[in-house]
Length: 154
Image (cartoon, rainbow, N blue to C red):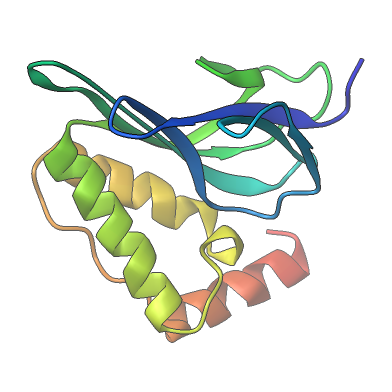
């Protein structure tokens, strides 16, 4: 049994695009020029983006922010992710996906790695965007509070 969460990636320009937006990849296997599989250690947080189209336009736009689980732990299933992951954010439809990508950009503009922010922030972004509201911005002050909370094990 693999201890890593793996994600199958595919890039066929203009048809199917599955990629990792952020996360610490610890293993990568290239199958072909357009296919690869990446792996994440348990506890790692990563964003997986899926997009596909046909002759009539976009068919699918999705983003999932997941936390890789320990072997045997319960998890949500996600296409192309084995075994699945703890769901922190799951959005579909380009306007919501684009808003989530902007939230990621905002965090990176602070000089922070999105995989290091408080997992509760991704749940907050999910809940706000799902209901059509703007999420609160992640700040350095919130990040410091998260690091202190994690330090004491809360």
